[in-house]
Length: 191
Image (cartoon, rainbow, N blue to C red; front, top):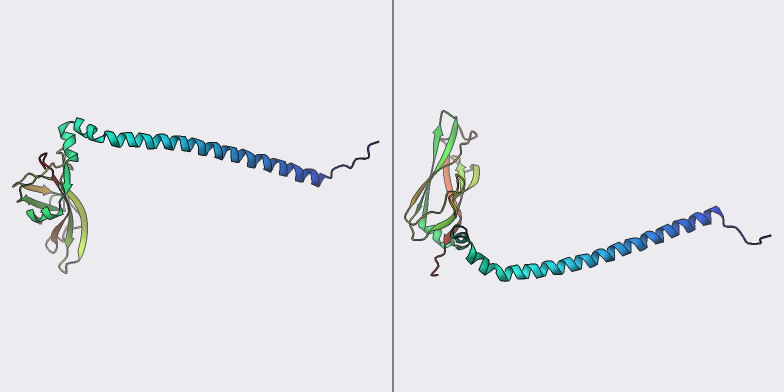
Protein backbone atom coordinates (compact mmCIF):
# COMPACT_ATOMS: atom_id res chain seq x y z
CA UNK A 1 0.00 0.00 0.00
CA UNK A 2 1.05 3.48 -0.75
CA UNK A 3 0.83 5.94 2.13
CA UNK A 4 1.48 9.03 -0.08
CA UNK A 5 -1.11 11.69 -0.20
CA UNK A 6 -2.84 12.50 -3.40
CA UNK A 7 -3.10 15.99 -4.85
CA UNK A 8 -6.47 17.58 -4.77
CA UNK A 9 -7.91 18.71 -8.09
CA UNK A 10 -7.53 22.37 -7.03
CA UNK A 11 -3.83 21.88 -6.28
CA UNK A 12 -3.30 20.21 -9.65
CA UNK A 13 -5.14 23.06 -11.39
CA UNK A 14 -3.08 25.68 -9.51
CA UNK A 15 0.23 23.94 -10.37
CA UNK A 16 -0.81 23.55 -14.01
CA UNK A 17 -1.74 27.23 -14.39
CA UNK A 18 1.48 28.24 -12.61
CA UNK A 19 3.58 26.03 -14.92
CA UNK A 20 1.86 27.35 -18.09
CA UNK A 21 2.32 30.95 -16.85
CA UNK A 22 5.99 30.34 -16.10
CA UNK A 23 6.55 28.87 -19.58
CA UNK A 24 4.68 31.82 -21.20
CA UNK A 25 6.74 34.40 -19.28
CA UNK A 26 9.98 32.61 -20.12
CA UNK A 27 9.04 32.39 -23.82
CA UNK A 28 8.00 36.05 -23.96
CA UNK A 29 11.27 37.10 -22.30
CA UNK A 30 13.23 35.06 -24.85
CA UNK A 31 11.33 36.62 -27.77
CA UNK A 32 11.80 40.16 -26.36
CA UNK A 33 15.52 39.66 -25.76
CA UNK A 34 16.03 38.20 -29.23
CA UNK A 35 14.00 41.04 -30.76
CA UNK A 36 16.12 43.60 -28.92
CA UNK A 37 19.25 41.94 -30.30
CA UNK A 38 17.88 42.14 -33.86
CA UNK A 39 16.86 45.79 -33.40
CA UNK A 40 20.32 46.61 -32.06
CA UNK A 41 21.99 44.93 -35.02
CA UNK A 42 19.71 46.57 -37.59
CA UNK A 43 19.96 49.99 -35.92
CA UNK A 44 23.74 49.83 -36.02
CA UNK A 45 23.62 48.91 -39.70
CA UNK A 46 21.14 51.72 -40.42
CA UNK A 47 23.27 54.31 -38.61
CA UNK A 48 26.35 53.14 -40.51
CA UNK A 49 24.42 53.32 -43.81
CA UNK A 50 23.13 56.83 -43.01
CA UNK A 51 26.65 57.99 -42.16
CA UNK A 52 28.03 56.64 -45.44
CA UNK A 53 25.15 58.24 -47.36
CA UNK A 54 25.69 61.67 -45.78
CA UNK A 55 29.42 61.49 -46.50
CA UNK A 56 28.66 60.69 -50.15
CA UNK A 57 26.04 63.43 -50.71
CA UNK A 58 28.40 66.05 -52.19
CA UNK A 59 29.59 63.60 -54.84
CA UNK A 60 26.01 62.51 -55.49
CA UNK A 61 24.83 66.11 -56.01
CA UNK A 62 27.74 66.78 -58.39
CA UNK A 63 26.88 63.69 -60.44
CA UNK A 64 23.21 64.63 -60.94
CA UNK A 65 22.10 65.94 -64.33
CA UNK A 66 22.05 69.77 -64.41
CA UNK A 67 18.24 69.97 -64.60
CA UNK A 68 17.94 68.07 -61.33
CA UNK A 69 21.10 69.31 -59.64
CA UNK A 70 19.96 72.93 -60.06
CA UNK A 71 16.93 72.12 -57.91
CA UNK A 72 19.28 71.84 -54.95
CA UNK A 73 21.05 75.15 -55.63
CA UNK A 74 18.65 77.68 -54.19
CA UNK A 75 18.20 79.58 -50.96
CA UNK A 76 15.29 81.09 -49.11
CA UNK A 77 15.28 84.87 -49.73
CA UNK A 78 12.51 86.70 -47.87
CA UNK A 79 14.31 90.02 -48.50
CA UNK A 80 13.87 89.49 -52.26
CA UNK A 81 10.07 89.68 -51.89
CA UNK A 82 10.35 93.47 -52.21
CA UNK A 83 11.51 92.99 -55.81
CA UNK A 84 8.42 91.00 -56.77
CA UNK A 85 5.09 92.66 -57.50
CA UNK A 86 1.81 90.76 -57.60
CA UNK A 87 -1.41 92.16 -59.07
CA UNK A 88 -4.68 90.25 -58.72
CA UNK A 89 -8.10 90.53 -60.28
CA UNK A 90 -11.18 88.40 -60.78
CA UNK A 91 -12.43 87.50 -64.24
CA UNK A 92 -15.98 86.23 -64.63
CA UNK A 93 -16.35 83.25 -66.96
CA UNK A 94 -20.08 83.44 -67.65
CA UNK A 95 -20.09 80.38 -69.92
CA UNK A 96 -18.80 78.17 -67.11
CA UNK A 97 -20.52 80.24 -64.37
CA UNK A 98 -17.30 80.59 -62.40
CA UNK A 99 -15.01 83.36 -61.19
CA UNK A 100 -11.33 82.94 -62.09
CA UNK A 101 -8.56 84.75 -60.20
CA UNK A 102 -5.87 86.14 -62.52
CA UNK A 103 -2.42 86.91 -61.11
CA UNK A 104 0.22 89.12 -62.75
CA UNK A 105 3.66 88.56 -61.21
CA UNK A 106 6.66 90.75 -62.06
CA UNK A 107 10.24 89.99 -61.07
CA UNK A 108 11.84 93.45 -60.99
CA UNK A 109 15.10 92.22 -59.46
CA UNK A 110 18.17 90.55 -60.96
CA UNK A 111 17.79 87.08 -59.43
CA UNK A 112 16.11 83.95 -60.81
CA UNK A 113 13.16 83.05 -58.57
CA UNK A 114 13.19 79.28 -58.27
CA UNK A 115 10.16 79.05 -55.98
CA UNK A 116 7.39 81.54 -55.31
CA UNK A 117 4.36 80.64 -53.20
CA UNK A 118 1.45 83.03 -52.79
CA UNK A 119 -1.42 83.09 -50.34
CA UNK A 120 -4.47 84.32 -52.31
CA UNK A 121 -7.67 85.49 -50.62
CA UNK A 122 -11.05 86.89 -51.70
CA UNK A 123 -12.16 89.69 -49.36
CA UNK A 124 -15.70 91.03 -49.13
CA UNK A 125 -16.56 94.75 -48.89
CA UNK A 126 -15.79 94.69 -45.16
CA UNK A 127 -12.36 93.12 -45.68
CA UNK A 128 -13.46 89.73 -44.37
CA UNK A 129 -11.93 86.75 -46.20
CA UNK A 130 -14.55 84.63 -47.98
CA UNK A 131 -12.06 82.10 -49.34
CA UNK A 132 -8.28 81.66 -49.31
CA UNK A 133 -5.78 79.23 -50.78
CA UNK A 134 -2.10 78.80 -51.66
CA UNK A 135 -0.75 78.95 -55.20
CA UNK A 136 2.78 78.13 -56.31
CA UNK A 137 3.51 80.38 -59.29
CA UNK A 138 7.24 79.68 -59.76
CA UNK A 139 8.93 76.28 -59.48
CA UNK A 140 12.46 75.01 -60.15
CA UNK A 141 11.36 73.09 -63.27
CA UNK A 142 8.70 73.75 -65.89
CA UNK A 143 6.82 70.48 -66.34
CA UNK A 144 3.08 71.12 -66.67
CA UNK A 145 0.38 73.48 -65.41
CA UNK A 146 1.26 72.96 -61.75
CA UNK A 147 5.04 73.28 -62.29
CA UNK A 148 5.28 76.64 -64.05
CA UNK A 149 9.08 76.94 -64.01
CA UNK A 150 11.41 79.62 -62.63
CA UNK A 151 10.66 83.33 -62.89
CA UNK A 152 13.50 85.03 -64.74
CA UNK A 153 14.84 88.50 -63.87
CA UNK A 154 12.78 91.30 -65.38
CA UNK A 155 10.03 88.95 -66.56
CA UNK A 156 6.28 89.07 -66.09
CA UNK A 157 4.14 85.97 -65.57
CA UNK A 158 0.37 85.76 -66.00
CA UNK A 159 -1.39 82.99 -64.14
CA UNK A 160 -5.08 82.17 -64.60
CA UNK A 161 -6.24 80.03 -61.71
CA UNK A 162 -9.03 77.50 -61.64
CA UNK A 163 -12.54 78.86 -61.33
CA UNK A 164 -14.67 78.92 -58.22
CA UNK A 165 -18.44 78.50 -58.32
CA UNK A 166 -18.70 79.63 -54.69
CA UNK A 167 -17.52 83.11 -55.72
CA UNK A 168 -19.84 83.29 -58.73
CA UNK A 169 -22.24 86.20 -58.48
CA UNK A 170 -20.06 87.91 -55.88
CA UNK A 171 -17.18 88.97 -58.16
CA UNK A 172 -18.31 92.61 -58.15
CA UNK A 173 -18.22 92.82 -54.35
CA UNK A 174 -15.04 90.81 -53.74
CA UNK A 175 -11.47 92.06 -53.78
CA UNK A 176 -8.67 89.61 -54.53
CA UNK A 177 -5.42 90.00 -52.60
CA UNK A 178 -2.18 88.03 -52.71
CA UNK A 179 0.57 87.74 -50.13
CA UNK A 180 4.03 86.33 -50.85
CA UNK A 181 4.48 83.46 -48.41
CA UNK A 182 7.74 81.89 -49.65
CA UNK A 183 10.52 83.01 -52.00
CA UNK A 184 13.56 81.01 -53.01
CA UNK A 185 16.17 82.27 -55.47
CA UNK A 186 18.67 80.32 -57.51
CA UNK A 187 22.24 80.40 -56.20
CA UNK A 188 24.84 81.04 -58.88
CA UNK A 189 27.88 78.79 -58.96
CA UNK A 190 30.19 81.76 -58.22
CA UNK A 191 28.50 82.48 -54.88
